[in-house]
Image 1 (tube, one colour):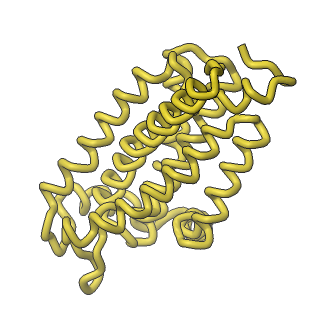
Image 2: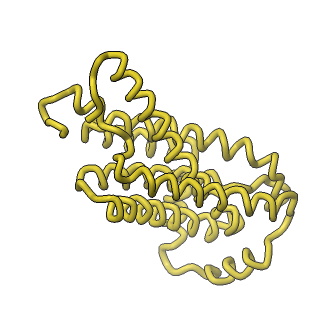
Length: 228
């Protein structure tokens, strides 16, 4: 059990509670499919697919205020906005005494930024006069931050396996969906680019959390401690 006055217990608190680990592994598998399958299907494309045109048509002529919201969400995916978002999420985790989860936010979103940047020239999908577009790094970063917030909420609420996994996925869908919508409204990405970005977050955050939790357990074992 965690104790408010026990610094060792706070340091040992895992990024992902054991009850949530199976669900997160499942989401990572789904994320891998969402990332890899569109990459294979749309590699080398220079225009929208039929699905992209259909989705884009649905958001043509956005409602009043949608542009402002879209630009605000887009800023969160830009370098400065992304840094502010990551630091804010990590700080929230530290205030809640979840250092492993704070590390997951910092390391995971940095890894996502590197991965999405590296994949763009490999997939070589292009939009607007040759700009590389797959996967959407904006969608990936905001989805990842939302997942970390979901993991924090599930922990603080002492949620069980089903409820906790639902919380994490709901926050991921909310954050990723809003950001994907913003990218589509702004015509910054094809809709299927945002699917790849969403999948990237679903894949990387659970893997990052698993690595960090293992490192914490190894350190505790060497120091003669036990996880919380």
